[in-house]
Length: 199
Image 1 (cartoon, rainbow, N blue to C red):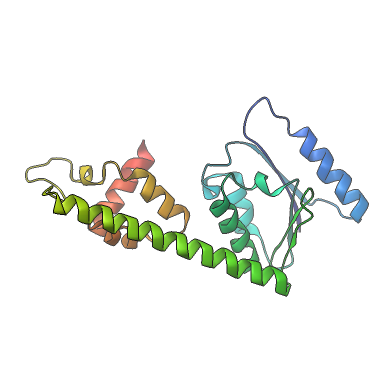
Image 2 (cartoon, one colour; image 1 turned 60 degrees about the horizontal axis):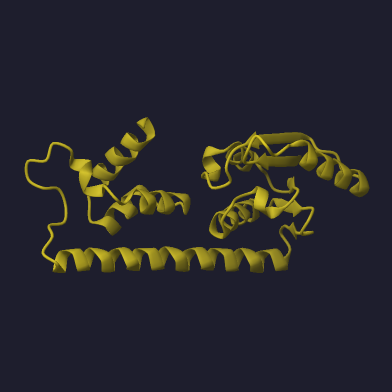
């Protein structure tokens, strides 16, 4: 299967330009798009919550995902690396027209995938270390960590940590592991994430 992925982040941008680029490219390469996926959504949103996530779940070995440029996949480096690494694990090729990337199962792509994984792992470790240092400073300052006695809302202990938690989830870190990093119980983390979903 050959998938064409198109994304714009605002109503002022048009999908037609990207459609034209991909169709023109496929014509020159003798290819045909089997399925299109188009969406108007910010690239900062977690790819799993976008239509792109549905495509990635469907991808099989030998499939090709074509987009006009790599920035259509995401708006920050680590998100793009996560997506590309996921595709490479499935032995799916990712082609971009403007940058002429042909990321697949060849040795260069595997080296790139390793670099992506290593970079993401380093970032996760840095985040974890910064969190531990921040918690140690708070504790050393005499501030109580965890839920105050009598608090009716146990998830308040996680107030101010929303961005960290979301970033960890984007990297695929299990909820229980995030809970350990923040010094809370897994059940509290599940409650907090459920509360966020309802909002």
